[in-house]
Length: 111
Length: 113
Image (cartoon, rainbow over all chains, first blue to last red; front, side, top):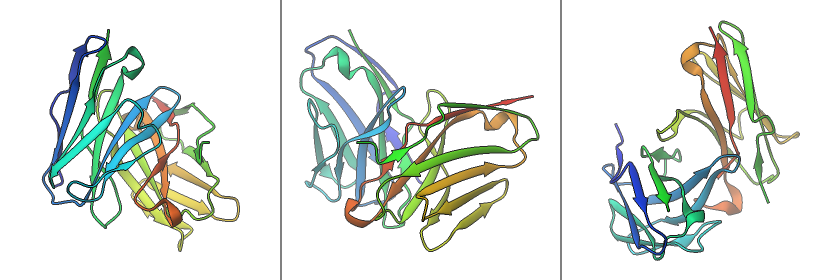
């Protein structure tokens, strides 16, 4: 079974703090994604990566950056957290087989 | 601009009856469609998919129908069970979207025992 593991299930941070969300997948997938889920807005793509050190902006990249130094690991960085970044963050990976496998999510609250 | 739309935010169905969840899309280049199920505080789990070369795909109690001319897909759950109560997202990809999947806003299904 594919496993996508997100490092933190729940985080509480203060405005202006730097936040790291980490994601690891164990199936050697080429593609990895970061989404955020908000009520009434569904899942919106922040960034994705199709290879090590490669990244592409999704629909809402502002205020975020990403890092993919190893194939299995994809990190989402909030350089200076703001209250409008309070959300559920979902990491996903996929191979060329096309379906996305999601982690359990990280619920971030920014105070 | 929302390329994938789920116009019903919620749906309630009696246990044992059919649940029909609908999804519309605007990009005619989409060629692969998926449904995901999500419980609170968990990540979405893959349910069923369909490629544009088909108009129907079945997996147990779940059937997805694709109407390409109407740019519409639907998920049928028969019979509905209380454990099916969750938020259901449809997603689409293909054509010039490359690796990107576009998700709808979700429909919250409640199956009443």
